Length: 190
Image (cartoon, rainbow, N blue to C red):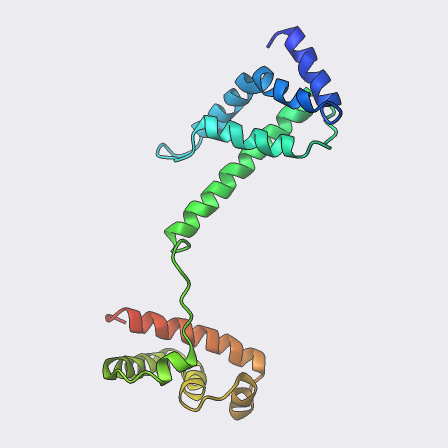
């Protein structure tokens, strides 16, 4: 970047919020530097990364200029913020990829009390009974909470009184029991 370009960038950063046209002039002046930063960031990422340096530059730039009231102290301040924006984009991208890997892209299914109790399919009733037997071996109190909730239809407060525990304990055991029963019923191997 030439000295003249550096001066123009500094001028735009200082007066950007006053001159709407300035932001459109900024990107061509700083694009190469941003792209260099992005390439360096991407070099430390895995080889099969789906995000490219150009997309990283564009996303970071959009984040930076979205806050047009930002008081940029200098070019160094702006490029430091750009590097930080790129880091955050890569982190967000990694979190999204990890959540999809762990089933984050799948639809949530709620296991309701009525959905299993009112089910008249003998296979489902037998699967529930077998799952409850397995849960009983793993966590007797969670199995008891599940039985009281499924078969007697007790609410959380009523279940807590019946077992002599707090409602919070019942909710925790209930959450675990539903997840474990769903897992056991979904996987025939248990």
